[in-house]
Length: 619
Image (cartoon, rainbow, N blue to C red; front, side, top):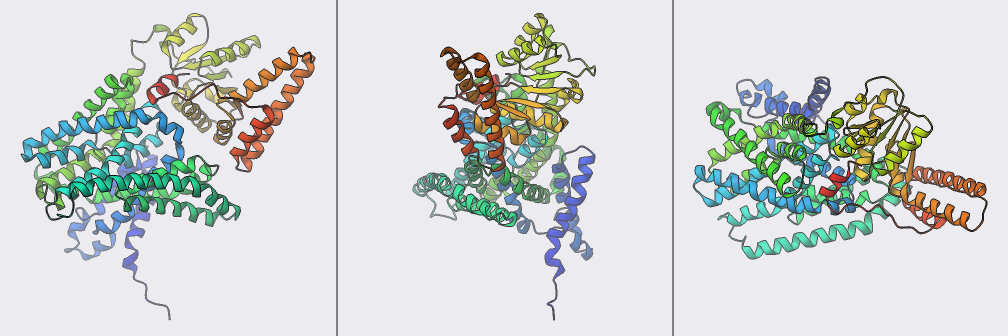
């Protein structure tokens, strides 16, 4: 006889799945971020919503979530999977390029915001310890909300997205020392001392070193072994295992689980399994992030808001304004970000974050914050998190208004034509784009050039060229340029992130569009083929072919034969590239291209920091 099933034990997963089935399609139709839907559902179904009437109406117990702790352990993995997928989209090279913003912009943002908000908190708490903890907690922003919102807007690779991500990454690194400082100040835990704090820092550094070292040795062979089994189930299990092991290993050494998962993602980003892992992880990330947002909404006690609405709303607005102003000024004055980028970054990072809830909760439990005032701060932080999607939209609108102001040359403010002539669109009208445009003119092929450098656009328009100011990574701008009727898109930008952003936006608009893109090398070309380009032209390979052509002609080989052999070798290389992509082995592509074409160096090196990358992304 089958054992009796306890239906109540399945309450949380059933309620969450039902909520997801309602929230996601409804908010998608309303063109509103599902984040708000999950937050609202958590507040409605949580202990401070319908849950507070369970005693009077017991049947409500079946449709409410009254145990936040039971949900929070699962919800934490939403942030873990988010950071893992972000790591997959990066590489160590790109992370090195971000170091100035991570450890410069991120550090100063936390420091200055903590000082300003701590000074404000001192007027309420009259305690240096409490004020410092409140300032540090409120200086943090929401990784779990800001990054999905940016990803939804296709803005992660935009300058504001990179600046925001850099600051958020430093904040994640800072969480562990802050939590340990709370434990050190907790008088009920005398075993925590400054010497043990130093030991913890050394332990965390050793853990990072071991994670990176072991990951480089183990992950690629491990996934090669798993993929050889040709079993999607085992591959999925391997992906989940890596995320769980790395995040728990980081947590065991005092680091955040999210940081461990991020490192694992970075390591796997260097392998040929990156795209397959990303596709496998995405559904788990989306569902678990939904659980996370619901858990945040469950902690929203609106009774405090009802008791003192003016004070709480004013405090929430004041925190966002102070943080946004500091971040805007810091980005603009100290790190060379444009006014538009600094403004958008400030509005994205102005609200509080999920780690602030953790820090404030621990501070209340340690007796370092009065419970009533601490609960008000939790509510204030949650309210600021709820407005992140709204702030993101406001920041984008403000950024656009600042991007195309009266400060532009009148020639650069000319909008692209709205007719339906089938043109070739050239994204990036620097030296490479200008040469492409010149050759199209010789063959009487109409084209549009797009660029983000207003002075370049103005100069080209005065020379009679059909060049227009705008960011070709935005689908709406591509639509304004007639991508629906375009004959082809040529992407000539000079940074990998900007090239991929344009290709993704264009392919989203038209699946049948012919896209030819500039690539750094064979590996980058392989990635662009996965993004959906029809032809990727590696700079290093083309330089080698042109050198070969010159040498053969100079030693007396007839030019007709030289041109034919160069074209034949180019076609062979393209076939090899696509064939090895299907086999999932970009390293083999790189090796074969070096062996058959010759040794070469990549002349287009990455910029030294993200500020340079932002300026160069204009093409």
